[in-house]
Length: 599
Image (tube, rainbow, N blue to C red):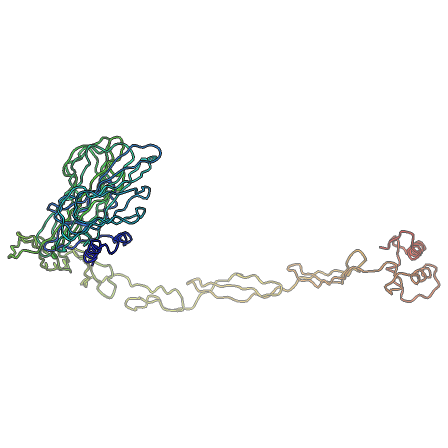
């Protein structure tokens, strides 16, 4: 559909019927694979300054000269303010394309000011984006006939801030079908990313790390394949930190350090199952050697004709020189390509036991074809158990033979058999019965070991003392066995002491005559509350008034018949005697004005 759209757009431009700038709003899909026609080829991803962008770079064919679009890399000095910096997009090894549709993304700190078309693919129509402020922007070239010219495609100028030492990546990406030839066939293209670095000038050369592309013949089973990472144009690096990504169908078996970067320390991952996997070299001094830095051994499936990509990525600052300055690097991916299996008659070797047989489980013997390295397997028969050393289980009795057990010489299995003539000629095994009144028997053969008899009791002892009101317990024990019996011990009864009654007063309580026990807290004590008297209320009507003064005066004078007289309320002054002093105090209280209070 994209090819058809491009032709329609080209025709529209020629007829001046519609602008093409609307293409800048088209969404960009992440590229994960590119279909190939005859023979699968390894994916190749190339990065310059912004390694992380490789994840959006389209896969391309390997093992031949590939058409390549390269974003240049420029370095400017740290300073204040901003500067305008131009980057170029160049097209090399152009096989002839009728349409190019690229997406250019750049760091958000950059401002895209302008773009100027170059001479490459000059017969195609270039449609610039309608809005330079969009990020990413769309770049479109298309025409009626293919153009095979290479060179400068486009010059883009950015405004870059100079205040911080930093790399600002500028990356390209495309989707399958965005590059096509005159016959509308897809063209695979390698994209080399670039950008602008603010900092120290770039080294004279840019190191290139290349993952090898390896072809293997298809077949059945798997095959171990060695893939190298080679370093070229090394300006001298003191540290490298990369991530290795590989197809999930591959199994990484081993990593072997190569001869290049000999003076740097290579830190081998402890777990090779990680994907991505960290690759780290560092040292005290920079190493400028080139060549193989690492050999990776993968196990690849042979059953399907397919390319299994292996790529590298790195963040800015992952490569640095002796002065700890960042070194830009180009990372080129590779992979393992499995072709169609060639037809031939297998020639099997003598085979190797890859899974030893056990006593109960079959083993596996693996044979390898000496021509194509395909493998096949055969079962190895289980060995069966070997029992040679039997040991008594110590379970023979006075009645029966015991058993004996042997452990397999090759595993933990055991075998138990009868231990003939192992019956013991020893005493019976008692059932442990201790009651005199019951027989004690052998638990094995049932023989009577002790006949039943009556208990023989001792004199007993008080085990629960009696109280005045509760019975106690006397316990008797058999002198032969452990049996016991109990009897009641009579209650003691109370040991009483008598106490005389005491009348209450206004200041203390009284009590009735009562008894207490000397051994317990038994008592018949009943308390009589203290007297509660309204002082001066001698007639008991609840009010102190002149009636009370008259009755008190008559009591003191004598010779009067007085009814309901309360003597306890008549001792007004509290001297223990009822006399004229009490009448005087009461009269003054009733009269008032004497500052008298009755207690």
